Length: 463
Ligand SMILES: Cc1cc2nc3c(=O)[nH]c(=O)nc-3n(C[C@H](O)[C@H](O)[C@H](O)COP(=O)(O)OP(=O)(O)OC[C@H]3O[C@@H](n4cnc5c(N)ncnc54)[C@H](O)[C@@H]3O)c2cc1C
Image (spheres, rainbow, N blue to C red):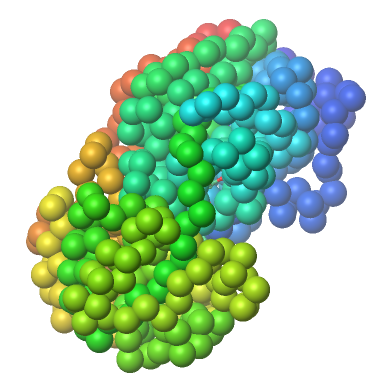
């Protein structure tokens, strides 16, 4: 096939037999059902994205186990001008690993080795599941600083390329905060792929870039001494009281890993908690260090609350109870959608310092259409609140009307989960540094096309 410049091959016009021959020796998946399954993520939370993405399927899926495998796939994609979308756990929310233009999906989950663990740091291959990494770190008395609530399936590379922060961010900040990500090795997408090593803040060039800026091969992340966290549920009679408690719990004397408030109307979807999260009480889900339990209990009581659950994760599991992290972040939405698909969600960043009156206003304004849930995290050292709100699905216009209302007052910013591009989702502006790096790491613009507005075909290198 004749190579083309500055324009991706139309997959229909590609000689796939020849492409497959070029990928000899690799694990190729051609069966339509499997290709379809490996072209999806959790975009189905959004009815808007469901309509837009349900038909998107890779022409070919390749599973890679080694750096040499990645090099071979990258070179073949470059030679044939094929779109290449990297996927790992497939737990992203915005169609992040859905191949909008078909082409090749490269599944990196077999690249999952722990390469090195030292005091305060560990180096792992990008496809490693975060929970597996944590178990390896725990063997050395250390632990990951943060992870998504999907960590049983989600990979470290997917977290860096698609995520933001999560469980642990209340204590350690978000992924982009200095000191959390130490080193990353990236494979470029070119006819002769190269490896680029990024250190510290340079990693921002691939962080939250949705895999448009090269393939992350392995990463080195910071570790902290392990703590046997106590997973607690604290109940409050009013939602304002629950939020006031969350603000008070930001006191430096308390060592807390996770702090999330969930309003009472979610309780029917938390069936396994039963009377531990009754329909007339609002819940705060936390992970608290054993040393902080006494002041934590006093603070709950001082705010008119009571603790209905407190125990280590194994203790809770033995009683059939979920750990606190499966009650927070986007697991809250998941609990609801598992039972009732007439809802969707929105993500909000509140102005700092967080003012609970903003949430009280939204409770009044939206009534039964919007249910409240806030996660607290440190960003550049400052304590911030983020909302993952459950929104009744009444159509696209209603969804955007709710977004406009929320952004109209109180300094709230919406991170729109109903769009596929990085810029429309949260960044709002084009990250010039990322686009500049893309010209080095993906000069033909083949990686996950359609996910960044900052990339225009005119930027593609002639080849
Ligand atoms: C219930 C639920 C809870 C969640 N909670 C959180 C949370 O607390 N915090 C959070 O940040 N996110 C959260 N997420 C989103 C998602 O689970 C995480 O971001 C997760 O870390 C993604 O990892 P993954 O392996 O599933 O990535 P995928 O979904 O496979 O990929 C995500 C993106 O990264 C790219 N990518 C993957 N691997 C590589 C690689 N090696 N090189 C280059 N690009 C790559 C993909 O192309 C894609 O654009 C949640 C999602 C759900 C459904």
